[in-house]
Amino acid sequence: MAEFSEYDGAAVAEAAEAAGLRLYLEEAMRLEPLPPDEERALLSRAARGDTAVADEVVRSRLGLVAVMVLAREPDLGDALEWLEAGNLALVRAVAAFAASGEADFESYAASRIAGTLDAMAATRRAEAAWPGC
Image (cartoon, rainbow, N blue to C red; front, side, top):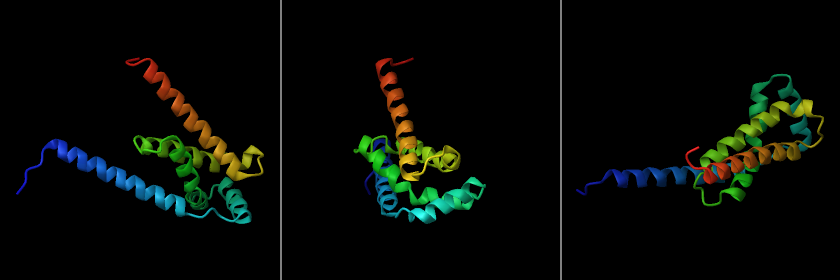
């Protein structure tokens, strides 16, 4: 029976995480956005506090986050952090859309997600420029 070092365990864990991320991204991109009329109706209900409906809208737009993250982090190195930030921005976009006065949710959500990812990238660049600060 072969013995495994802690480094082998770390490599296995890293490979499992990457495989899990790939599966998540594939599933997210397979989800179809809701038809526009249905999405508008659900966003209106979400604005009145229907959290189950808000979750449905978020789930239908996870592919948008996945595509935007992959455009910035194609090698999946830090994709989990980028996905978490993008998904949180999507949740916030669903919550704020009704009060925004915007007509197109996809554009509104994409703008909010991009803003979050851009801020994250700027923070990373600043941290790299000033290590230890």
